Length: 310
Image (cartoon, rainbow, N blue to C red; front, side):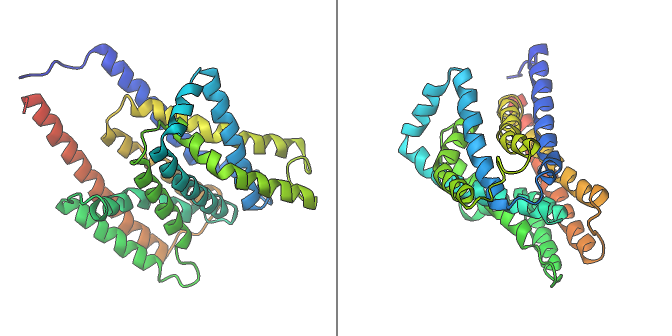
């Protein structure tokens, strides 16, 4: 059986999906600039604001779309609630590690965390879901492990933050597999679980008289409120893209964000990238090349089987 070639509508949808995915990753990749405007505010306070404003933004977005019923249905599923309770904790840890790295001039290390995510996902897939790895994927994991080991020889600055970012995001992805919720509704559930702690912290900070919101400038207030929109917009674009692109294409585009982080840290904010760091990153990037090559080969083989009607 020979399949028909893609229609012009299919190609147009794919192009729109690719544009949406690229824009989402580019927004995630340039977020360091946004957070730099909020330097000087404690990271915990920033995360508390991000949680609350994101929850408000998502609920408002779903209300405007007339999708509150779907959000309620997501909440009514006990398996979803368990998955997103863990997800809320993990995403809060991930956000906290990332923003702390940005505000402490460790953007390059934050980029390393997201470069490691697909490789750590492959390792978790092998050990948790018993997925089989091919030779290229095994080589990728070996090179990544060696690269991290090299970076740990920097006694003064081992990559703990990068591992925290990669570990929390990968484990978040594992939990996401246990939920039937959409990306937007899942985020709403996660934020609703951590929102009480976030609100309690902000009320406590306000009671002490040193809260940032309402205590500094209107610009700071707007930037804090904007963290919800800045969190939601790329996620909406990503959700749009995933319905129109193959998993392989999404997987290749995911490197846009950490590449932006790396280049910004090195070229714009002047973070050091020399010596041991170059060696460790090079090994990890070589591992990523092996991983991408394996993914492309698997995708081509699957496409060929479908074309042949197997």
